[in-house]
Image 1 (tube, rainbow, N blue to C red):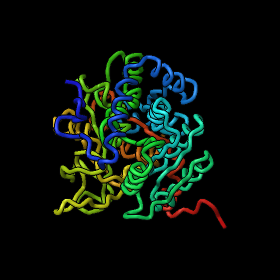
Image 2 (image 1 turned 90 degrees about the vertical axis):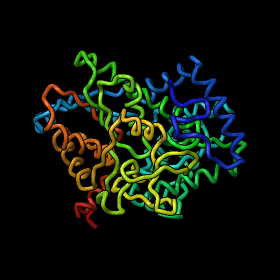
Image 3 (image 1 turned 90 degrees about the horizontal axis):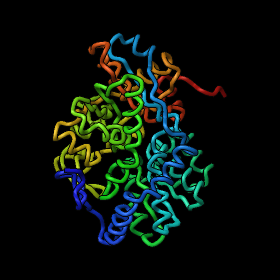
Length: 399
């Protein structure tokens, strides 16, 4: 059976858990999405912008020096960092902005953590002449200053969220509160495979272009499918995008890498599938990091984009069905991988992507040389240089 079902469930996960005010809006979105996803003209528009604006297809690059250094598996990198705006987020932003247009919406709202989704949303809004409001936690604005400035430069209104942990969780909550208050003219351009149906399916579908390209590219380069695919997981959009076209290919291992923070034995992590429990939050039933009373625990990661206490419902299904494996990488391992890829391949990855690279660095030496591993480099690391420099105790600018 194809998931989700008509009610938005991936087996037991997903669904629609929103305020009564939003039910008509969500129903309308479901209807418009059901029409759009089967409309060739809609997909022709998306493909046009991907080719001539986003810069797709993104390359699948053989990381020869990294592979030789590790001495095991042959590692390929899916270069989503080379997309316009510097990450995979533009894939679903182009799709959603065209859907918002079809629905007659003129005001776009979005949440962002690391800022890549915010930048991609602001970019799409500038391209299509729409009003753009971005919610970002105050702490994330501070640690992602380059992206905060880029959003403003692109014409977006950036709202600093001062509630709670002042990070991604609270930005999502603020965006949803805005949505409830402005249902008539506003489209919520959600940034991951989470939230109420149809967002998890819709964003996965837009992002599956990643896996579709990998499938064709690896056949051309190697004449066969990869043995394993690795991607970082916060809400889970880049991972779901690269995993989805391979779900029926049971010989391909799918590995999602969560943020282990300071360690799973501490409270400072964002490893939802490792430490979370089933619950309802932000419009969906999935796994969330909670205390014994069912209250959401503040997540932690050096990476702002993985700093979320939940997981998309399709990932929850894949984990429970054992179709995908989920593991975690600690901050220090991600920072080491950030440096390693930079110095060995001349590629500065996002700290989010560095979690996937770190897992590959740990695992590849244990694998035979004929093992083909594809790692999704979901974004570039320009935005993270201040965070990394701070961790290193390096002053970028001398006063």
